[in-house]
Length: 114
Image (cartoon, rainbow, N blue to C red; front, side):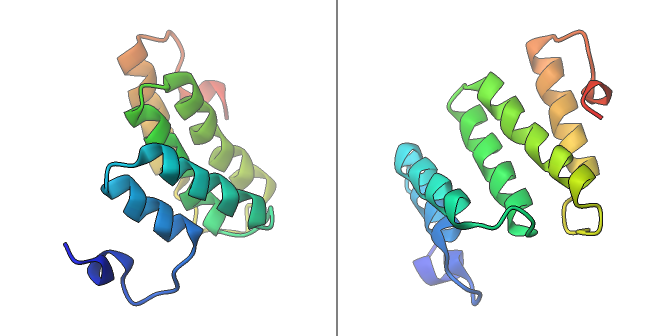
């Protein structure tokens, strides 16, 4: 896929560049861009949810399952703190946590975090 198709017509930011690096097989560099973008974001904007989700997926892909679970928890806590921001898909995150727990054979569900 051509780089302009990956980036789309929208604004390019460090998260977008991180995703491109991830697709190119450079997960360590992608994580650095994600973390740098996280440092730049205000704590109450909708982009945080998708960034947390990307960090969780990246950690899971690198078999860092505990770290992945921590990143999956953050949007849920964020959504509790800022319920007016509806762009976060809490149900999708809860399902991701449940799938993670099933893979690790953990005895509790995502309801533990809510």
